[in-house]
Length: 139
Image (tube, rainbow, N blue to C red; front, side):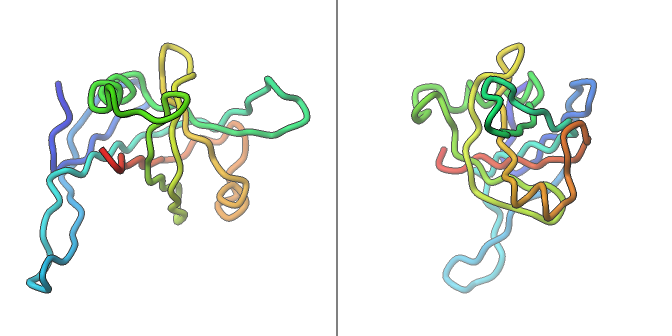
């Protein structure tokens, strides 16, 4: 099952995909909204976890579902950046920011770092489960 342009992928906590209709709208030549067929968006529920490799730092992440990670690997094969990263636009609650996801989660999953400012603004803490949206950019 490949990622369909012009749709969002919703991956539930059990890892089952469901297509959610949706598209980004923008303006081209001031004619009106247009659909961006290249938008690749994943929406999933995830638990915030603390990276404990460095005790002095508090890096927090969510892991992308295995199926989403596999699809991202296939879509970005050969075009990933340093450390195998992929540029994304992430949303948790009312906060949206540009960042990168990295391979390194269990089972080959990509991981998304959650910025301290986002955790504060959304009152999001380690162990909380939230709905996360990840849109691939620059693919």
